[in-house]
Image 1 (cartoon, rainbow, N blue to C red):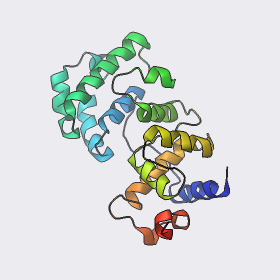
Image 2: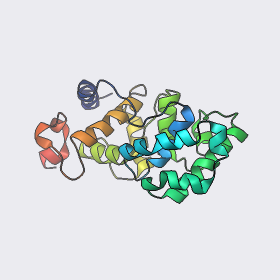
Image 3: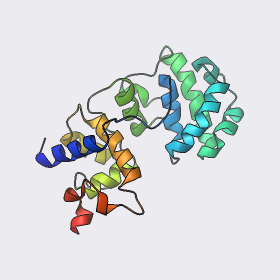
Image 4: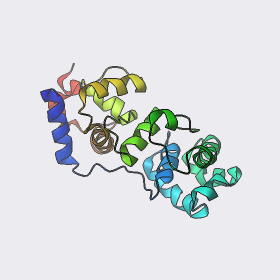
Length: 209
């Protein structure tokens, strides 16, 4: 690990000692559902929606047997509700049918689930199974790592592989959670607070590169 990466990780740890996922859940499959709902939607909005959804369908079996139109109503405010509702119900059915009712623990198995892409799979692997090297490339991660000169380009999978090459595997999942917190609080997309940024010494935008 080079000195720059180590210093950035340390600054983020100092600012955000707790590197928790912002989505609220109690069961592993609920995290899968919450992450699906978070696509092109804020975590705050998802956290407002999921309590009623999980109360209406309190078990995996109930969710797998849910009425898709009713799920659509419950998740409507998250956007793309038709696709999300269908994916949620079908994914829960697949968990019961193919995975003994458990969220699987490999990338290959997770990618089989409806609505689960690499970002979701990496988050589930990191948060549920604590798999080293899990890199969650969301918009915050791509934007900020580009500004810091850690990565190049905006393709999520390419950025994921670039980060895997430089982040210590045991730090990668927490690093991504901290980057999300940092992107919401300091390095926002529209009005970054560069004057109070703890990572400004390494930022290409600040240095005018």
